[in-house]
Image (cartoon, rainbow, N blue to C red; front, side, top):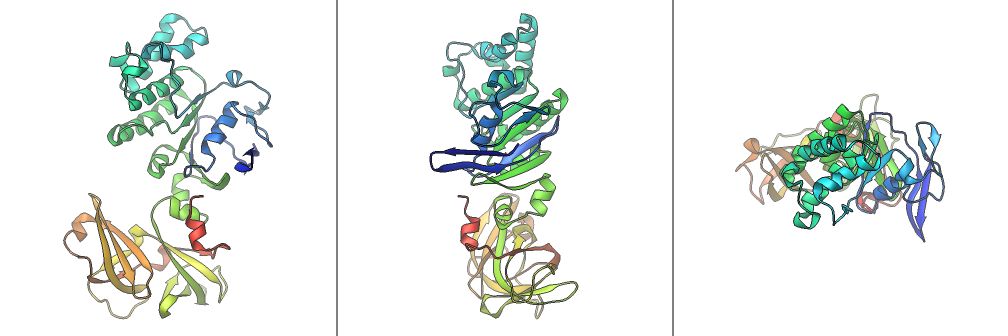
Length: 363
């Protein structure tokens, strides 16, 4: 597919091209307004593209009605039938496909047990919480028997604990049932947990498409590095390089070494280092490369981890994410500290045409 869609002057999607293999679990990841839902609706046949084609099983389906595409779209807004019970809502799909009543019932109860709502089978939608209604909508989609499942933020309205539990269940059911899934989310951790591959969208354009490991460890641009995981960004100029390393000059006469050697001398670059790769110590290590001193400005307790924000001597702010058992009680706001990172843990990007701040923005 090579899709484009506009609503008036708003460009929702532009030149979006990708493939999904049979049985694959693809997560479409991006911020609000990036075009994720529009993409699902185009695939489902609910709206038509302005440009491009949609293929299913090597057949062009642009002119095929939504109900004949062998795909089920589970919207973010539930769309349940208010006059039907939970069980009747979930049985609707199998019955519409003229499955025997006993088989439709078994399929419905199986997925209701999956979403932990079999005990509310006789309830009506208005008797359920928003999170429960979303789980019914998910169950109804799963019960249809269609091989392509299009999920729009399927876990968004659930509480944190249930969301974590259902992630694994959802992927397991999809794999056991041989389903192909396109799952839209803005939750990076959710995408990393369930996906075989991740498609990152920003402002209607594909930023990266790859495995969770590849997207996290080798983000292709500054936006992906910032959106998927937490990353420190340092602006600099390549000062010198050899076969193994480059030296990048930062503001305030600071400099760091990186393993990247692909940029020319005097080229403006962005050095990106994940927070978990940004090390921190309260002892002066003396002279050394990639050792930058600063002052602790904020401390955040995150349970198993602690995040410390440090203002470097040149005014740049970086963060370090380290296990609580290492950092708890060791530092206070105002303490002088030293941060460091290994040259091989840094990624280096061309300096964005519109500047770093613009590249970090979601819109």
